Image (cartoon, rainbow, N blue to C red; front, side):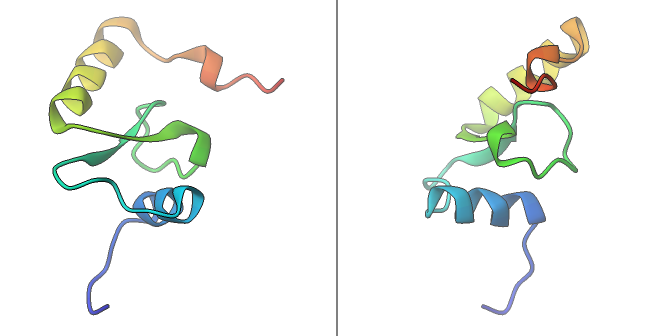
Length: 69
């Protein structure tokens, strides 16, 4: 389509068969921008993304995301 996009956005699109709604971004629940695990990617607002970052700095890694069951 004439432009490049981040790999995680592509993975989100393939998994959900849609792009994030207008005005929303793809958030990383694991707070690792390089992560392309589809289970860690969710759509949300930029404000939610900023709050995720603040929460990560205050509380660290969500180890529940690292466990395999």
